[in-house]
Amino acid sequence: MYLMVGETKYTQIKDISFAPETDISGDSLPINQFELNIVTPDSIAIGQYAELYDDMDKLWARYWIVYAEHITLQTLRVRAKSPVLLLSQRRLDAELWTAKPAPEAIAEAMQSMPYTLDASFDNVTLTGFVPSQESRARIQWICFAIGAYVRTFFNDKIEILPIDETEELIPPDKTYYKPSVTFNDYVTTIQASAYSFTHGTPDVTDEYVEDSNGNYYIVNSQFVRLHNPDVPASAPEKTITIDGVYLVNNDNVSSILTYLSQMYFKRTEVDLDVINNGEYEPGAKVIIHVDDETMYAGRVASCDFAFGLQAKSKMHMVPTDMRESSTLDVTYTFNGVKVGRYHYRFPVDYAYSITCPYIDYQYNGHRYILRPTVTEISGTMTSEAQTITVPYVAALDYSDETLTVISVDDFTTESGIVTIT
Image 1 (cartoon, rainbow, N blue to C red):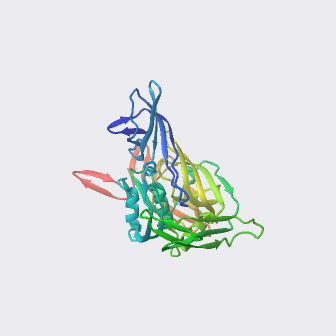
Image 2: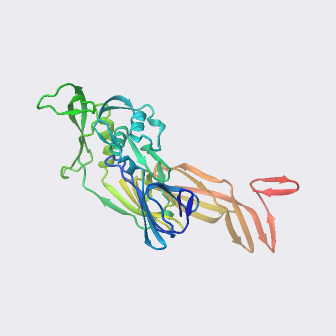
Image 3: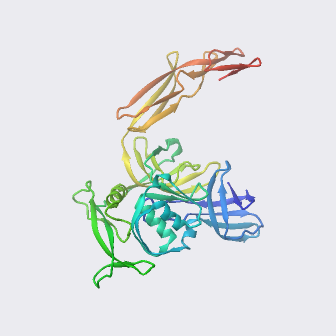
């Protein structure tokens, strides 16, 4: 890992702390940060960006330096926070919106802050009232209303993204034994206030809001409820209430509650350690092996990274649910003899793709390099266990100190040189 501050590259860094998170429930907008020590006598000014890279030049974070002090003569402690911090320093006017384009609303909240908005939100509009609030709170409200989340890691600007349902399988050889599963209390009901606003002079008993131009709007609201159909009869009542978010209205409240039910009606959380060089990140939906026979799927909420020859992370997943799975056994044969076997477990309906390896096989004084007759096995997992046999043929035979080419996938010739592939 190394750190870039302006044009200066610092390679002697240690004690890196980086634990990004995201809140896809819309309940908060986290300010992520990293901290590290630099072995240097240099001083670094706060109030500028620092960029954290790995040794493959992949950007992990571009954050704003808020602390840089020497803890010894040769050790500088640096703390940097995501640009969401800067949004907390800006305040916006109170307004009533009627079909306001989401891109316009986000641009006003971001002002000069570098950001990207996913194209899927180009034609989305917002209706409701926004009070005078910090830009950070405004972005949080907007994301909650349109079904988006904020990503401030592995990029150089704030990204506003849709909540993607694409699932990625984390292989068991990347998962440390054994993940921990926690069962929370059942949530029995989710309810949200849906709002509309009428311009006029409020009575004493009316709930009302005032925009920054002195206009009054009478607040009309109603609770909309969604009950958990899977709650046992003996479970105590537990209700999640969404109230005071004035961008929730009769047009979007149903979709908001439906999404939140996927968050809150599932009651399991999973904690696990994963070899993670930045492939798996907060906000992503993943499938993991809890043990040899059990798989869970859920959303990554946070990753607490530790750095060495490879990075690994303590990953917290919420919400999760158990996923039905089945087994796939792949056997590799050469002249009818089994030369390899692999056992896989995949979720039902998972589209798998497995590359068949070349095999180094020794038999009766011969050392063969075997090649598969098909380069890839692919299919969709069913609830029934599957078995696949892949025949192999000899590509190379080394015996009596002689290497013989028997078969190849392809070859080319140029200027008398034969290239075998």
